[in-house]
Image 1 (tube, rainbow, N blue to C red):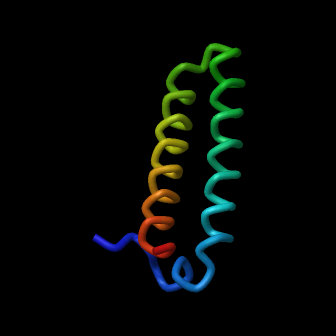
Image 2 (cartoon, rainbow, N blue to C red):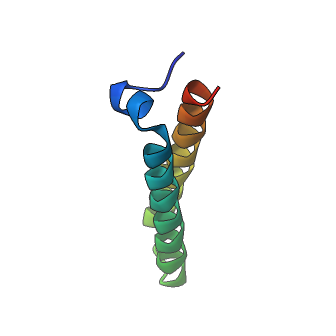
Image 3 (cartoon, rainbow, N blue to C red):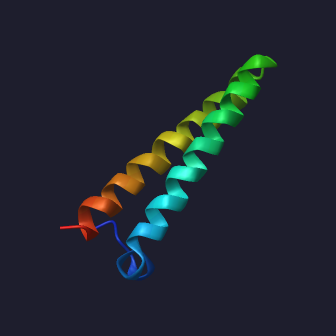
Length: 65
């Protein structure tokens, strides 16, 4: 299944960079939430970070051959 949309195909490096930066932000937010004891919200942000990095990897594989 091809995960790259039209914008992903035209600007793959920019899309991947933004996804990696958003993943880093979500991981930092997860750490902050865990420090304050918000375990449920931390799991939600962790799941978002995991999905985001997987999507970036799939875009990379689909566009950079």
